[in-house]
Figure 1 (cartoon, rainbow, N blue to C red):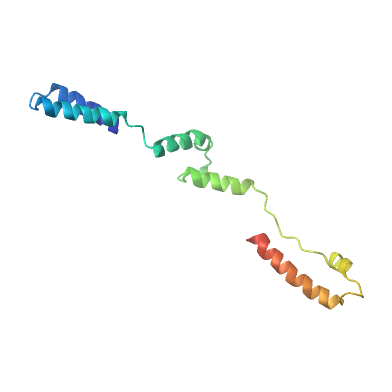
Figure 2 (figure 1 turned 30 degrees about the vertical axis):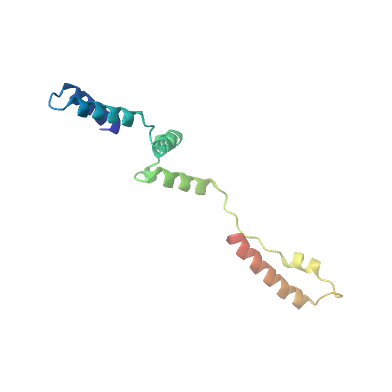
Length: 126
């Protein structure tokens, strides 16, 4: 039973109850009416929106998703749909295209590329 249903029932019972004083009855009825006038907490509205916007997940459930939370199903489907990016480094030919005899030796360039690629892989893979 919801808060509103309980308060409405209590109000109805109070109206039919003869054992309370008029002042108690008026004070209680006022309190109940004020409680009924209170807006629903925001989390309820957020839940309603979430359920409405994710109903399609429930309607398109796959056997291996049974028992999973909607949020987990959404996450899994997004991950499955996202293309997996495989890191591609520089080829030996691309590395060699930077090298000139005047600047650095091939060995120095190779060492530099190892450091650069390590840093890029760190940044690329998080």
